[in-house]
Length: 89
Image (cartoon, rainbow, N blue to C red):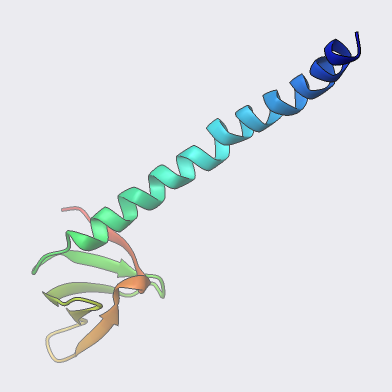
């Protein structure tokens, strides 16, 4: 009788955790994986938006940094950590 009472008291907690996992944790992990894949697949000519809101064009992807062109005269190195998203044509 005591084991059954313990099981019925833990069942709602397990259900809440399962709902939390499928509605919050799993989609967030999927989004992080897609973002990491997008950053690793950046190539010359891709247009990106930085976390600071700058729109720039990739000139040369390097290991930890990316050389980007802000306009015709300004080329800077940007850390891969600060790439927010890629602009699709």
